[in-house]
Image (tube, rainbow, N blue to C red; front, top):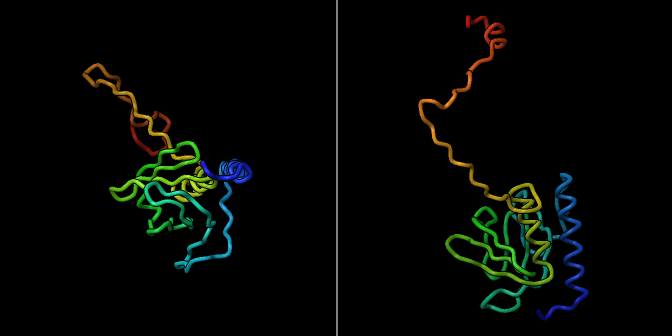
Length: 153
């Protein structure tokens, strides 16, 4: 990667600090806007990124959009894949791959806006259970609930 060590270190440190803040219930801090904003929209940053197949660009991240060549709504992001200093975003049947020292920080901002967490939620499938006549049924109401509601058991 063609970025200076200081930039890589600063980007990683900023990502770590922001992830800790978001885990404690905090939000990214807004900066002075460099692009026209929509109502209720905040800009969180702008920085150089390398776009796969397009070269070096400036990315702008707001509370509602990611702007890098094109404008993408954060709610259109359906998948995120982290790499080494890179992020592959699945946006409207298209994959956008960004890399650079501030991309890990940007991924925390995106997750904070979309999920309220520092990282994307892990999809853990529930174990399959076979249901048959011997499967115990949960009682719909505990005996105490029946008495409180004036029902007979």
